[in-house]
Image (tube, rainbow, N blue to C red; front, side, top):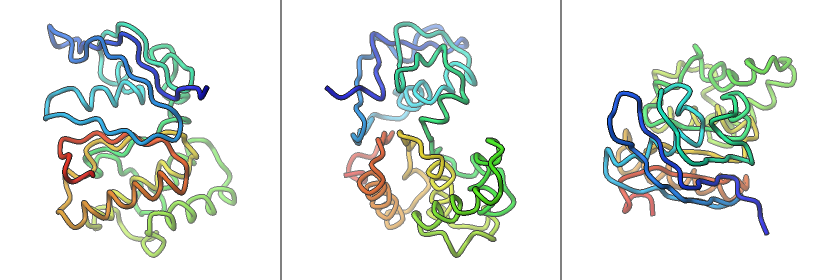
Length: 210
């Protein structure tokens, strides 16, 4: 039997600033290679669930965990953000919040630089990730001058080259018009199939994701 890449058991999460838990008694298993949609209205806890997978909860957003959440066999509350980042890549709803480089190429390379990867090893990975998302011609461009769809592609490239097993897309259509939204959904689907990635999509717009 295949080993789960994500496994919630009787899981709950309560932000310290709130009196009631945002997540309660969650039981969910995601296997490698699956594409999963987490659907619900705004404020229902979708992003909280995603942040429990990538480790932002409780390390960046303080709170109390009950039950168990395992990612690639690691209990997330005991794992480091660095260890989880080698397995999980997240594309945020607000792509601007994810940019750290002065150029598209620098931004894609940021995670590799944090790993102290030699430049000669880094460049092919950056070029490959840019080509996968169709941004090879934009490596010298300033991220903030790109369109919403292009920004999302750059954010995706920034997590794709790390060879993570799981990609989380937190409301990927929020800042996109319908045409660019369709392009984004097609890109996510292609990467899921061609790169054999496990994909978790957090959305409230079912009709646009299907």
